[in-house]
Image (tube, rainbow, N blue to C red; front, side, top):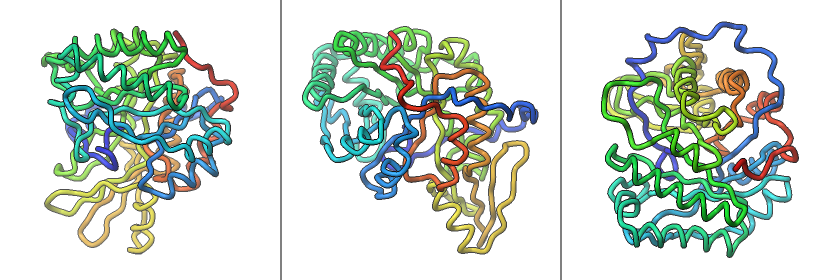
Length: 351
C-alpha cells in the first residue's frame, strides 16, 4: 500500500474531520462474514511471517511486496520468496504480488510517468510482470502506482487496461491500489479514473488510511467519517463487488512540534504501556490515542478497526486489505473473525 516500502506518510485530514458526522451506533452491528480478507506481507518484519503462519487461514490472499519498477525502461526488479508462498498456500491463501513505483523507499512519480507514457517501457513492464507470473505461478497481481500527476490519468488507465487484458488471458486477476478521496472538488481530476480502472481491473483497493501528514498537527490517520465518505465517493464509480477497503494497522507518533513518526499499531500499544499512559478515545474520529512525554499518538486498535470493517460490510464491499501483516495486535483477529469469510469461498477473479 502507500507507506513507501515500510511505512509512509499521509495528508490533509484536519480540514475534513469537522465536516462529517459520526455514523450511528446502528452502523456497527450484524457483521456477516461477507468480506474477503487480504493481507500485505513484508519481509523486513519477522512479525509479518508470524501473522501469515498463525492467521493466514483467515485470508483469501497474501500479497508479497518485493517487486518494484526499477527504472524508466520498464525493467522489473525484485525477488521471489518461495518460503512465504509455500507458507501462505499451506494456510489456504492465494498469493498475489505487488508491483510498485518505489525508488529508495519513496514513490517515484517520474519513474511511473516514463513507464506509462513511453510505449516501449510500458510493453517491457507488462512483459516483466507476466514473466514473474509465469515463472513462479502467482495467483494474481496488485498494481501500486502512487503519487502520480493528474496528467498521467489517461496513460494509467490505458496501462491498467493492457495489463489486465494480458493477465486475464492467463486466467490471472489484477487489483489496483488507489488513494482515498472523500469528496469531489472543482480542482483538476487526479490520476485515478476510478470508473476506467474498475472496468479494466478486477478489484480496486481503496487506500483509506493515508489522510494525515506526519508534519501536520496531530490528528487521527483514518477518522471513520472520512473513511465512510471515501467509500461513498468510490461507490459512485466502482461496483461494491469490485471494491476493497484498505485498512492501515498503524499509528502516528508526533511531538508538539516537528515531524512525527509512523509506527505500527503493535508499537503504539507498546509505547502506551511503557509510558504508563492511559489510552483515550476520540469519539468523533472513532479512534484511540494517548499522550506521553509531550507527544501525542493516534493509532488503530481492534475497536477502531471493527468500526471500519463494519462500514465495509454495511456497504457490501468485496473485502478488506490490511497494510501490513505483523503490524497488528493479536486481538485484531478476534474482531476480524466476524467479518472475514472463509478463504475457500473466494473466487479467482471477477472478469
